[in-house]
Image 1 (cartoon, one colour):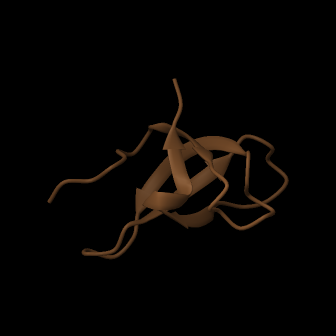
Image 2 (tube, helix red, strand yellow):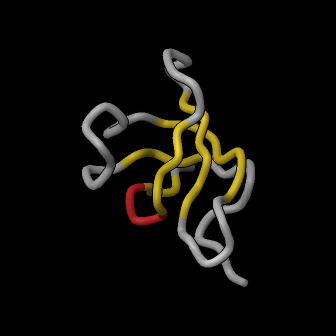
Length: 62
């Protein structure tokens, strides 16, 4: 199975993400259930625990 992101990838939440995540940058910690495009992301702001977002709500950062 191909994944859009790998564990350890740096990502940013885009305008399709829920409002409280939009614009945040973080690191992919894990993947959701097989066949789903979910990713567990720890955001750099460290004000919240890890969040689960879908692939279309995330963009790769450098």
